[in-house]
Amino acid sequence: MRKVLTGYAIELIPVSRENFQLLREWRNQDDIRTQMGDTALISAEQHQNWFDKIERSQQQLHYIIQYKQQLIGSINVRSSDGLDLTDCKLAEVGLYIATPEYRNNMLAFAPSLLLNDYLFEQLQIIELKSKVRSSNAAALKYNQALGYQLSPIADDNEFIEISLTADNYKKATQMVKRLLSRNRSN
Image 1 (cartoon, rainbow, N blue to C red):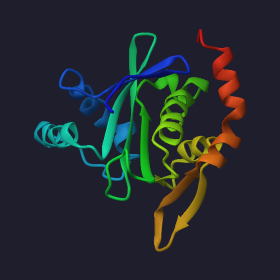
Image 2 (image 1 turned 90 degrees about the horizontal axis):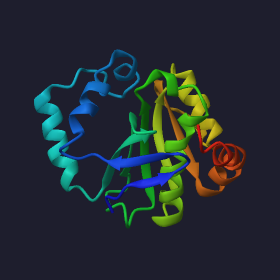
Image 3 (image 1 turned 60 degrees about the horizontal axis):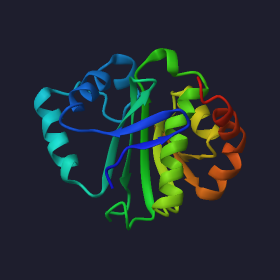
């Protein structure tokens, strides 16, 4: 299950002992950290414990995004229903682009498209859900462009729940997939 995924001009490389420290550096950047559910800085010990846990887990996958031999961000998925990813029907996806020049252009969609294609088509996931900070307008707009539906969370003004079905994803991403397929040399 931990294999490199390739498409839309990028590669998703499984996080490994050789590259996991890079995630801590990125995750602790102020512009990324402040958009997370837990905004605290992550210590080396916390990060090592996290990696030891995910390295053996069948309930989650973590990738580093590579574009033209440059590592630019991270994307992950984890089971929402407690089952292994190969058996679950509900999952949660998280993404951040660490390299600012790739955040607000068409390429930023490539990691989500590649992972979502894999989740919906290969793993037969039925629905993806996540929470996004209500103040993160760019992330909300990005996810809506992928077909996510937004729902306020009762008694929580800080986060909005987002959910995506395969049908909504397919309808919403036809155009962006065509554009990325034509522009593979980007």
